[in-house]
Image 1 (tube, one colour):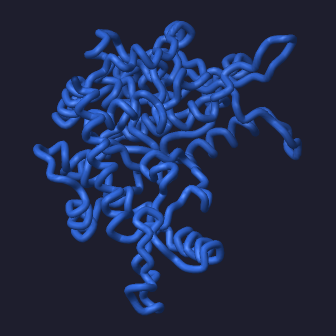
Image 2 (cartoon, helix red, strand yellow; image 1 turned 30 degrees about the vertical axis):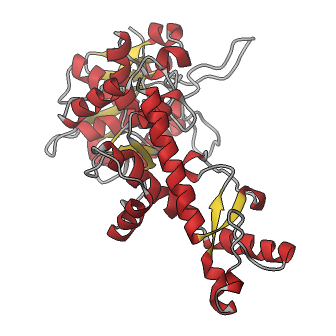
Image 3 (cartoon, one colour; image 1 turned 120 degrees about the horizontal axis):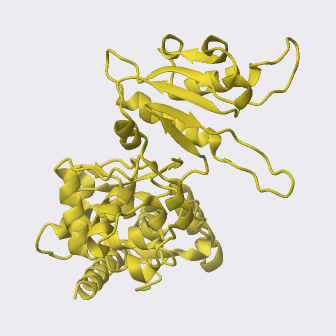
Length: 379
């Protein structure tokens, strides 16, 4: 039976055919386009690294999960096992996953090559012999899915994904918090759902479980995409949860206090979730001193002095010139920081000079508007 390996983030999973022979993993070779046929198994390298990572993550402290790796091409199968051997468990000990894959591919490339001959193919068919696993546990550990499903599963429409409600998201979060897993989905690479107590969950796991309950299906990575602007992220945020980059630090007490002074009173813990933490991160990211300084300098060059573009307050009329500029802050008026996509470029015309009071009021208005939208969406 043919399988493909679920990436957990990539719609469609990896283009790499896999078979199981008992608890041995057979990875098909990669091939280029020939005779009018398209290339095959183009994600060979990614699939191999994922296999190695997941197997090694499952191993115990006393027994490596990978016993050895053998070449499994048709010419190699005619040879004794010792001639097909690429690496043994002892050689992988102490290597990182990337280093282990590099060693396997290097040995595969050099297999059968005459001394001094350059070239070679590092994406040959492999047999990865495992230990401590059964056929079914390998399926689960590697998150293998039927290849026929790969050919037939399509991304669900935004309308279908929109059937996931805040209640479905809440229940999915609680299931994951109680140590239930979403085995068809991998751990997140770039973003986390950040809960109030600092617990981080993979967004795809959250939405996958919620989708299963909402539609009564077995959710697969191919059913939806993750990322800013995608329905899955928007629905999770509408439910009141914060999605942050994996390296986003938790707010400091000072940032929490500042954000709470900006937000209007809100009942329940959803105010903490959707309001305070999101606004903290919004303000933290917004403070790029280089961009702020450049905006102020350009504004002065154009108008001759700084003033608030909302209330027209002129700091120089009230304060000494050497401190007056501190009254003016730079606000992202065109695209809010929390809504920016990866690698977003902010132009100076996207920014606005506001006095501290107007800047705080503007943030408060944004928070109130977001709360009203969330309530209307839940009706």
